[in-house]
Image 1: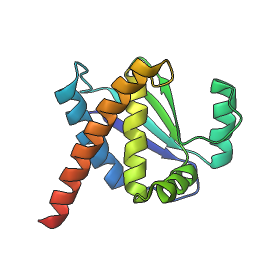
Image 2: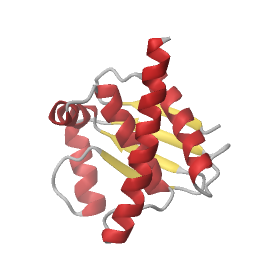
Image 3: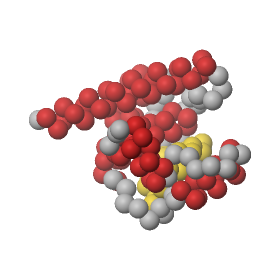
Length: 149
């Protein structure tokens, strides 16, 4: 299982129990669908303010605007910086529950940590988003079936 550490300096509440379950399910799906093995790898998810994610985005990507998730690779797996404020805004725009938007972006960030990249061209984007959407759809189905039991 992924060794998950959650750090929250955003000042907002984040659904940690849901997040831990989600990361566990993402790990299972990635292991099932790819060659990647995530067992005993470390992942840090840092929740930061909208202002902080904008600063990080400018510093590391040269984009002076807030973003939802940034991924930083490490020898183990890596770190995701996430803005709950941006996630909430996007959830409203996409018509999703905040926890589902958060889950989608955590999945997105983990795929980046594994080397998937939608910004390097159409082929990479198709590969990443096809996998991301398939895993997300599967996890939503599992989530819905648990609620109906």
